[in-house]
Image (cartoon, rainbow over all chains, first blue to last red; front, top):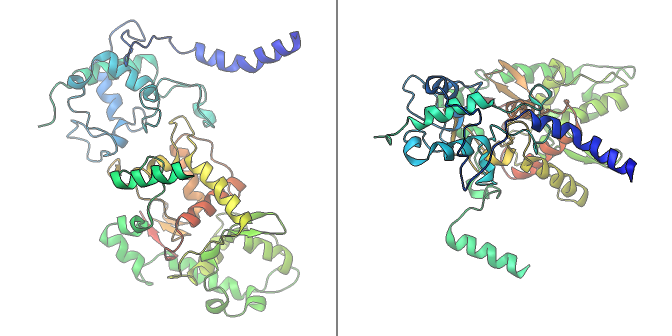
Length: 149
Length: 258
């Protein structure tokens, strides 16, 4: 009994430890209403993250109001007007873990580290974006109020 | 079974392609069809196709004696345009002795070990790519014809399972891009269906010839997933699945790709 319990605890501990590094959050409906950091993000930094192909990766699949970026994706909705379509809380859940809304989505879970298979060692136990970066992206997307002309 | 048929019929009536479905035969397209006209032209001409340099090297290696047996490929197989015609269209092929499918590179190295008593050529080495390209070139225009026996089918299923499995930090599967979104653009570039019709390929991004396994590893790295070592059974199973998925499509080796 004790041995089994210890074995289970040992087996679980890496995942528990890894999860502990992420900020906890509560999902309400299809949103995470409260900031992951307790503070608002910086929309300027958020724009840079979205446009960066090694950090945000967003423009691999999405297009958006980035006239200076020639090569943008067509696999996902245009980000123009995202702030009109969704509240900051809804944007936050869609970035944190879109699979909670649509399990078959192609959108990566940007702030989840469990339930992923065979992550390469360099990225193991790390979310794609940290909590501050998620909030910066939320703050930026919330400024995209006008739908594409 | 009857319910399954009814559901399939409804799906067809509604004109919906269910997510996770394989590409319909009539909709299959080679990577060639997604390329710019100039890149297509580069592939089309034997004097403009850089892959032909490897094919020519492979032709020389075919006739060269090697190993303790001092024997060449030609000593057993004779004239390659005759003996190797259609062979690449059947690979990977189930090897009964080993009890698993092997790709052309592994077949070449088996011949080296058993018939020539020579050392295996390393994966992605110039000589192995050259011999593979030379052998596969003899099947250009031949329809891909993977065997349909039971052991092959089992390995195809294993490959399909790897194809649809989400993996890596980006939590993506091969199928999400290459079955479900092949008409889209990833950062401005056509995604394509991932049809393995022209390997080894001359990839402009590589400035070199490279194998299908090298290409698979590129995608896995992009997904931030662990890429199995070259020659790993999982990659051979994936190759086999992709070839069975492309059944009937013509071989283009050596293809040129961006």
